[in-house]
Amino acid sequence: MKTCNGFVTISVMLVVLVGTAYSQKRTPVPAEDCIPYDANRLEIIDEGKKGWLLSDNGGSHRMAMFDNESDAALGLEIAGKYSWMCFIGRNNVRANRKTYILQYWK
Image 1 (spheres, rainbow, N blue to C red):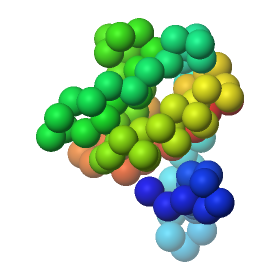
Image 2: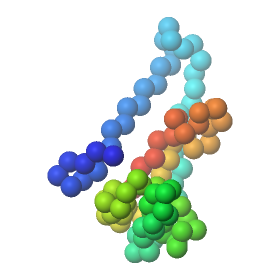
Image 3: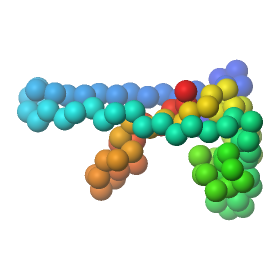
Image 4: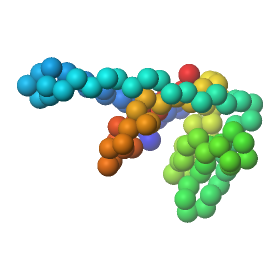
């Protein structure tokens, strides 16, 4: 995870090739899929070798995993400014589905 002036930077590139030489198949862009959460209940939990968990409900709602405590603290700070965790493409059925999921906060 990269940081700039104490803020986590996220780079996202979304390319849709429709009706070109690369793809003749028209694929609908999936709808936004958002989950509300209470920013006042956010916490980070040390899960040992697994990393650090960002949760809003004592670990039962697993929102994000981080490699270390400082990254988790930055994640907590960012998530605390919002109240929705959103996804595009979470329902895809590709073999490598995580590659095709865009996650963001709002």
